[in-house]
Amino acid sequence: MESARQAHGGDARCAREAPFSAQRNDWLHGSILGEECLALRWLTGGADDRLLIVNTGAALHYDPVAEPLLAPPAGFARWEAQWCSEAMTFEEWTIAADAAIVLRPARNEGTSLAQMRL
Image 1 (cartoon, rainbow, N blue to C red):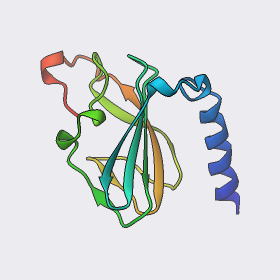
Image 2 (image 1 turned 180 degrees about the vertical axis):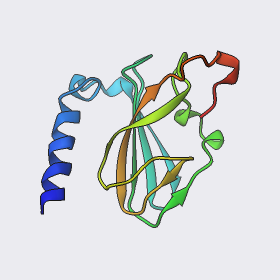
Image 3 (image 1 turned 45 degrees about the vertical axis):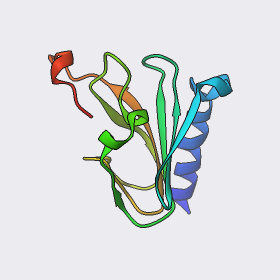
Image 4 (image 1 turned 120 degrees about the vertical axis):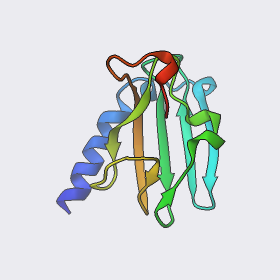
């Protein structure tokens, strides 16, 4: 029960942050990643971009090269987890079973644009 309260609290904090709080429908774009997995991206043009991945099925390893919506914004090297519904880590585009994750753009210090990857 405590983990459910913590997850709900984290979810409520995310809802009050940009871009979620702005409620602009022109920022929201989506893609199907698998039979039971989808991605929603809030495109704000920079550091406020967010990527929500919801997986209602088994754990999924996804190749982000196949979906341009998953590329980090210009000037950022990768995505990092901001919030997860489960005690999980986000590595190498493996999405846990029955989980949701909110990602935010991150920079790698000392990484040139030519070296950036997902």
